[in-house]
Each structure stands twice: as structure tokens, then as C-alpha cells.
Image 1 (cartoon, rainbow, N blue to C red):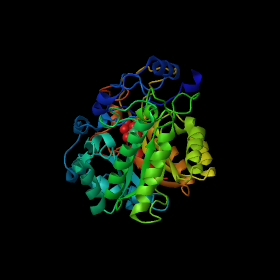
Image 2 (image 1 turned 135 degrees about the vertical axis):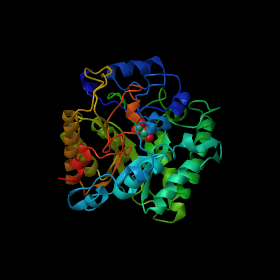
Image 3 (image 1 turned 90 degrees about the vertical axis):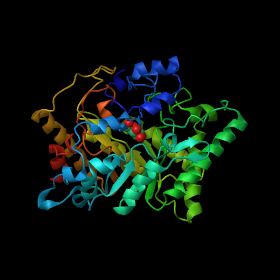
Image 4 (image 1 turned 180 degrees about the vertical axis):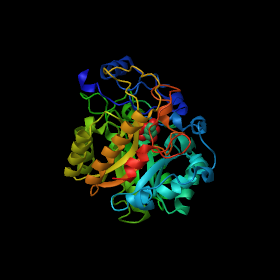
Length: 425
Ligand code: GLA
């Protein structure tokens, strides 16, 4: 119990995701209770700790973006600058590129902030398998293309998120497949490969790295992998072998475009990396031992103000770099709530974002960026999971409808103290 007592609330599945979640077994629920992982809203509730949320994000859904938004980019302005009038991407030019995870609605609500302060983007949801797929072999690329075109027009790079993840998968992907059946494993491999062979070349000109596998490691510290009770990939394969195949297909797809094209682009991505780092490194090492490269590890960094400590995050980064992997900060936001005060989900009451809380929140960002700057030689990018508090998955997870304040701009797209803390050091 104690071991998990300060787990961060993890991301949650979106409404779409919830609909696709497999029923949770009692064993999984037991682990959850034990570890006090996230309660995932719609997904059978507790389940997957996952957080992953993902997609969660329900946030992603339009409703959120609507709160507090002031409309067009022009109305929002460019959102403040640091000493000497420098923007985020300019201040961090000597350190690392600065990204934001966005939905197409951001191209209206915070377009000027994006263009002014960021030099890369990630699709918050719109490149996920379950979002782009309309059936086996058929796709709707409209939202993903809109984001990619925005990146191209504004000279931004993208992170491709994500090729293989147990959440937000299309319903047909596992349909008709029996667990641990050799023919069905081949069928699933074929479906994974076909998807990877389709999406990777489509965005190769703008995506400079892929989250090849997202969140394969268990939240239970005593277990290595998220097993068949949470991941249909694991359930059908009967093992973590799907991770190897994902990296192999991604590597092959990139190299087929041009030899050498895969270099530096293949990442494993996860949350609570301070708790999972040894198992993540072991998994990536195992893939490499099979002859397929893994270049880096993404730390999502959905963090609380009080956890994990910068010392813990720094120690995880040191382990990753010592093992020979690049690091990216892939999904940064700082919740103002602690919903797990004693290890079990105990939703915190809604708070006002008082000047005192804003100062604490800004100090946390200052400390995180001081740490990232110290490790700049090993960090390939830092990406926020959103832009302004008008649109954040944390307004719905793990407590639906509770306002959160996790980002650098407020719900009216005005600069917060956190922006100042990151810009001026
Ligand atoms: C996870 C996923 C993201 C996003 C976030 C927030 O960490 O990787 O795609 O959904 O959760 O919910």
C-alpha cells in the first residue's frame, strides 16, 4: 500500500475509449485497490490503471475546450513573453524544442500562442489507431491531416502518438481472435503491420519520432507487464512479444522509406516512470537484444505539485541515459489536486486557484524546468499535454467536472505565473 501511496492520477480514457474497454477482471480490480491506481472513469472503472488515459482525455472532447475559451487566436494574443521579449521556444532554443499536444480545436482557440511559443506538436488523440481507423484497412485522416498540415505550414515537427497502445484501439482489431492461438497471433501481427505501414509513411515528412509502444508496463510493481486483463495485445500474444513486433514493424516501415531514416525515431512511452524505470529499461534492452533498435524513452510527466520529487525524476533520467537511451518529456502537466492522499482514490474537493496555489504551481514548474535544463543534453524535447486550462483532460479525470489548472495559460488563454516561472530563470 505504501509503495503506491503517492501515485499520480493517471490519464483516463475518453468516452470513445471507455466504450471500447474490455471488462475488467476481479484480479485487476484487486491490484488496483492495492495500488490505488487511477480510477478510470468509464472503463470499467478502475481498471486500467492506466491510465492512460488517454485519451483520454476526455478532455479532448470539445466540451472542454469550450470552457473559458475566448474564441479566436487573434483574441487570445500571443500569451506573454520572457525577459527581453523572448517566447518559450526562443528561451529554450539552447536546451530543447518545446511541444504541445493539441486537437484541431486548438488551431482556432490558441493558434497564435501555438505559433509564437511552440516549435512542435503532438496529436492529443487524432493519430491513435482507434481514432483514425474506420474499419480494417480504411481510415479517416481528416483530423490528423489538419494537425500535420498546421505543423508543416508553421515549420513545426510532430511526435507520432501512438502506434501500439492497449487503449483507444479500433473494435475490429482484436475481433475474432483467440488468445495464444498461433494463427490468430499471425493475424494480429498482420493487422499491426498494415497499420504501421500505412501511418508511418503518411507523416514521415513531419513526424520526427514515434511513440511506438505506449504503456506496456504494469502499475503493479510486482508484475512486469500489463497483462491480458488490461491489454488485448498481451492477451492475444500471451506475452509481451507484441512490443518487439511493434518496434520491428516501425523500424522496417521507416527504413523502407530510406535506409537510415529510422535513426533516433523509435521511442517507448509511459507514465509514472519513476516507479517503472527499471522494468522499462529491461523491456527496451530486450527488444534491442532481438536486433531491433529502441532509441529513447518518453516520460509522460503527468505530475502533481508534490510528487514525484525532482530528485526522483532526475534519478530516472540518469538511469535511462546511463542505459543508452534518449529521454523526452512527452506529456507534461501539473495537477493541483492529490486524489490519493493515503493510496486509495479519495477525490479531493474542488479548490479555487488562489494566488497562493498559483505560486506553488508555478514553483513546481520552475523546479521541473531547472531539472530538465540540467539534463538538456539528453532530453530531445519537452511537450506539454495541452496549451491552456480551457482544454485539459484533468478537468474530467479522475473526477468528472472538477476544474483543474495544470497548464501555463489559464482558461481565458491568459498567461499564468507558471509561464513566467518557465520563461524567466
Ligand atoms: C496517456 C496517453 C495520452 C493521453 C494522456 C492523457 O498518457 O498516452 O494519449 O491520453 O494519457 O489522458
